[in-house]
Amino acid sequence: MGKEIERKFLLNPSEWEKLSKPEGKHLRQGYILTDPDKTIRVRVADSKGWLTIKGISIGASRLEYEYEVPLQEALELLDHFSDQELEKIRYEIVHEEKLWEIDIFLGDNSGLIVAEIELSSEDEYFDLPIWIDKEVTHEQKYFNSNLTQNPFKNWP
Image 1 (cartoon, rainbow, N blue to C red):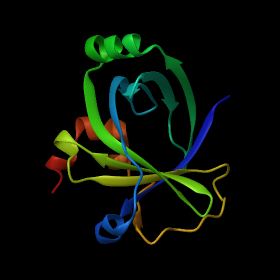
Image 2: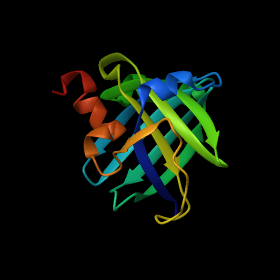
Image 3: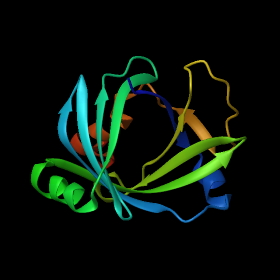
Image 4: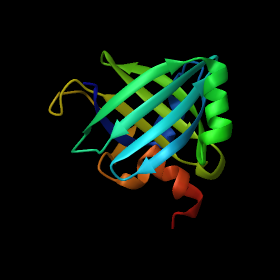
């Protein structure tokens, strides 16, 4: 059984700007199903595609099953079966031996920057980088699937 334990944070923009960053990856992802209890997502990054099924979040954990699919099939799924999409640039930063994924959202979610860290347990200790501002793990509006339905540009 696949399990994802992930925490989400907003960034301190001025500290993030000072950070030396690797080249980011452009991600296009769409949702075949967005339901409060489960989502089915298709993602394309560079020359690869993935199909991901996620269950309901309980705390910072949820079931997750991810499968690599041929790029052309992922593009066809996005073009023909995805009702809602988003795009972002993802940066991978290692801090204190932990991988952080920082997403700079584009389009209707432009202006939103979210950092995620995957953990092996909910109570795993990790150091917060200086560029982290506020935790938003339990705020559902920051879930990618919700950003396709209520984008950042519509927030008050």
